[in-house]
Amino acid sequence: AVVSTQSTGDLAMQADASRYLAECYVESPGHGCVDEGLLLLRKTIALYTAQFSGLDTSTLSTNDLLINALIKQEMYDEALEELIAVKEAKTLKFGEFSKQMADFYKQLGSLYLIQSRTKEALDCF
Image 1 (cartoon, rainbow, N blue to C red):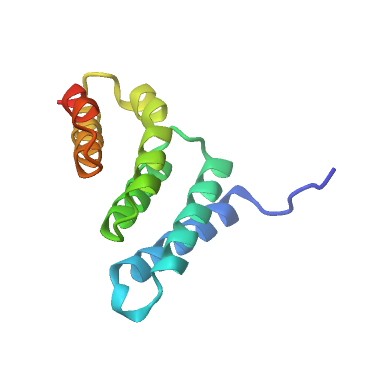
Image 2 (image 1 turned 90 degrees about the vertical axis):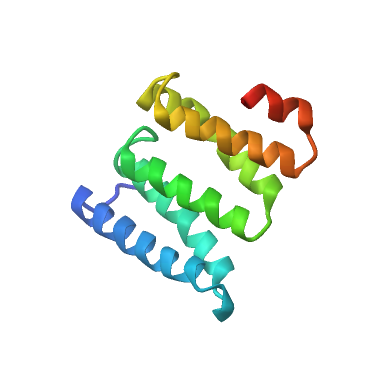
């Protein structure tokens, strides 16, 4: 078995730096760095999950950044996959009838509408 020599603080710093760089990449699409930004966001989510859990605010907010970046790139299928994958964690963290879940369903319904999946979209509203 491989034993990690990184401390929790090291993982946190690495995750925070990765997230910052990823945000810079996805916010400047004209520089051709969006793919790198998406990759770094996924890496950041993995780092936060390794350090905390899928239920912490850092992981969930980075998931939101990834989903929004995918939508900006018109990568709707991937955005929908990521959004559905985070549903359980958001429900557990915030509760089914929270503002965060209302926002979740609004975004889910909007993605369904973009894909002309009207019945699924209506179920979200």
